Image (tube, rainbow, N blue to C red; front, side):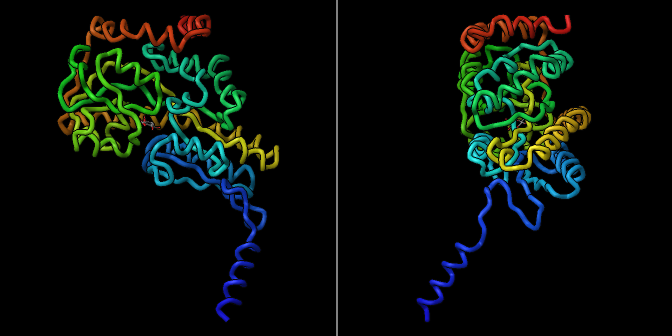
Length: 334
Ligand code: BDP
């Protein structure tokens, strides 16, 4: 009897249809998974839900997108990128920084001190250079499809001890995203870059003394609670790294091409919404951490130039072969 039951169960297991794991299908509707490291209410998470809403509406409910926020699926964005490549999930909203490990050309649009300000970055990203980079994510054969850029402001160092000039970076262990160029950036500033720690684990890594600090924008610094353990924030503005909404090429290929067009269109439509949410949160996060006692160090233009002056080797190494493009980026909007 026992043997018969085991045999029956095996038959059942095989009989249950198995769908590409990035999607599941029920009576003509498909549910696609989206991975997000940020919490509910964070600007990118709000944009993920807006994307899901628009896609569901435009496909009359045929395509549903389920958002897994807070890093519940993948705490490290590298994990979600690799899951996209093998079609395990359909979408991930990630930072362009770890994507550059798979599509090296993306380092060009996130070189330190490349943009004069946010407006300059958006002129580049929404112009031919940025759109070509977005297309290159797929054209490079990465298995990833770049759907849209989102805002993530500028990144700044935050530490347990005050950083008032580039000299204070000496010997500091700084957590970075998984990107070799960023590790070299911190080395050039005199510190040591540490990777492999997901953004949701930075707080405990600082608390336990594994690292002396990290670098990020106001909203992540506030949202992850890192300001409570690293209360010195220096406005060095070393990078502007856009967020990217990515899709799995394999999962998109399994869908009706007309639906893929709808997905691409809806993703583009969410950009303005995210930028709006971003501006609000950047302001409120800054106000919150300052009201809770964070020490913000502003640097003079001369002091910022000291940081910037050390970045030459990165432009030479990561910008090799892209000299004209970098110049075009610098000239954009002038
Ligand atoms: C935040 C980005 C998020 C990154 C995180 C990090 O929004 O996508 O994962 O930085 O530093 O600004 O890992």
